[in-house]
Image (cartoon, rainbow, N blue to C red; front, side, top):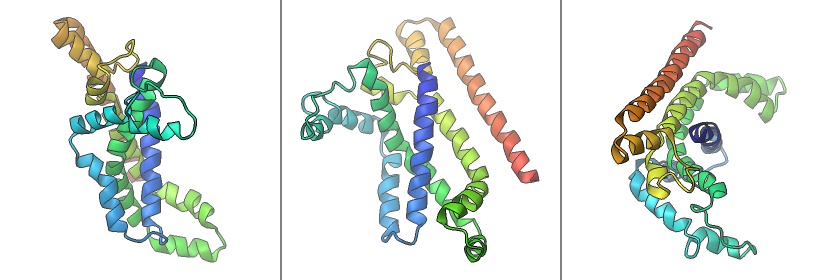
Length: 223
């Protein structure tokens, strides 16, 4: 259940954030695009454990910067990583911030491959920006979006370092991912049979995702 939560909520937010950032950076209204691309991509190449430790300080119930900012809005301090209700969203927020820059670069490449003549023809026909986005950008980005969806899905299925460093799967197993479960069963409790079974389920999920991507890519290539 936790892995599915990571997958659908975290994956959806990551794809949405990366697409929105790519569209913003490819618009003609933004200046210093290189600076923003570098800033958005920097978390991707930062050490994951260091990022997780940094976010633990951000989420600290007494000294964290997040609660400090919320205190100006009259919000009482929240134990982000100690409350089962908030621990999962807190980890997802950190994971999205850490990884969306990679997908953003791929979306930018996809946007740059869309022929500008299509937008010019649509503009001549009277299509507005939203109409161009729904009838040109989204369909032309379909193969790119599929690829990003699959690699994002695989990434969130294999989520390990974030819950391991930040919560150890707690509180009350509310952030226990399938990979962390496999690790705990195999290397903490030495239950190798259970760990191997979890590893097989993980392999099956990744195999299914890769198979779906291959079939869909062939479909787009034919069409």
